Image (spheres, rainbow, N blue to C red):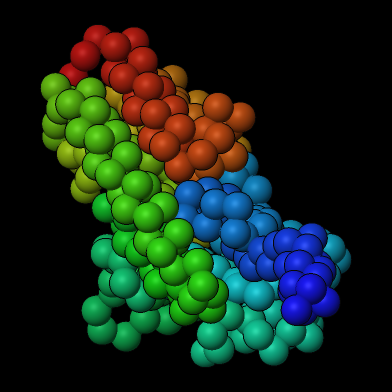
Length: 307
Ligand SMILES: [Zn+2]
């Protein structure tokens, strides 16, 4: 009997001393997805983002280290809608990681359950230079979509790591609750300027504009992914003058030459607005991204004399 108890105790001590189950290794294409994955996965996952928030997510330079990072991933989370089409598919193939190939359990595209705007109708050809052929891929900029991304990540993590399903569910519920509170605050802050007309450089802000009541009237780019042309720039200047538009919102990775030139001819103001977590240092997580963008917008609105 004593020996049995001793053996049991020894086994228990061994079990207790054994390291905790290794965390799931999650790789995301963007820092936005990494931030949301971290909210849901907590200390049960290890998250790495490939692109930095200050890079244009359509055109990320693929570093050799990306292949190694992808090789070790249990789960790859992509923005989808072809956002990463220029740089990601080859990397996934070269990663030699069967777990994360499209269609497998370790590949998650949360755009399939998100609200996607600007889905083209009719025949779309990429020869037109449009990088938004499957609809607007910048959908994470609506907090409601942040919530949907959170649910998709919770569902997949629970499926891959059923032992921690309750943990993921609790964290997702908490994320959703905090997001709801923050949304009320953000909407109240921007509410006095509902319908504010703005110009943006790229079509990054469709979902953001819908969520917070902005009216995006034109773009510095003639088409998504196509640099400004003199004729199109003239059209933007005329539209701004005709409709008394003062704000030009520019993502941190675009050249400010054309926006500054437009601003100088329209008495307008250029606002560098990060569309991603990590786009500027203070946009350090998903909540701080909206805190930062709304504060920058309010400052700019005040600087141009209100509406
Ligand atoms: Zn885009």
